[in-house]
Image (tube, rainbow, N blue to C red):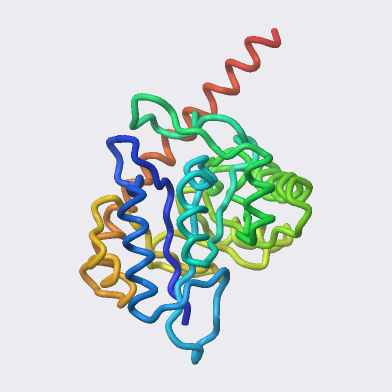
Length: 254
């Protein structure tokens, strides 16, 4: 069965959070995964095909293009990246600021090149809001509009979706399947509603700790789940950020 790891940023810049893995650490992690006999795959393999790992990256940050793509290409492997369609080429104003300067998301041409190189591009919604807090119309728009935008951008079908903040329920999962996605990804060890579980990788994880995660070490998985639980705070703040952006837009129009 394929283990699925979830990254966010891979960059040398400092930030107060734990989702930014240093490029050298990431390179060592990839090297060790391969040295331990794992295959790094794009997508999932059924049981019986040996040890495999799928690397996934949420948010579609510019550092994915700058740091992750060259590293993985040097090893001859690929990954999946989930893009926030409304923030292509923009900074991460949707997120809680944990660094001096905001992080940029990949521009349209960078996303196209990533797809041309064989990396899979999936959707991470339009605006990175907590989908469980939206009404059905907003939910449908977040799912369908992001899918259409990315498909038009890269010229390929998009059938993979990663839930913002890893938050989902029966309604959001059913809506995602109805929108045409065939693979849904959560965040953390819990898995239900047909959503694929992913193990987050944090800046505090040593390479040894990462390998223990791949072995589903109970302590490491519990530690990751506890850290991930703090994303609920970010999800609440995202609602406030979204409301403030909408009010600013309305004020400019009036």
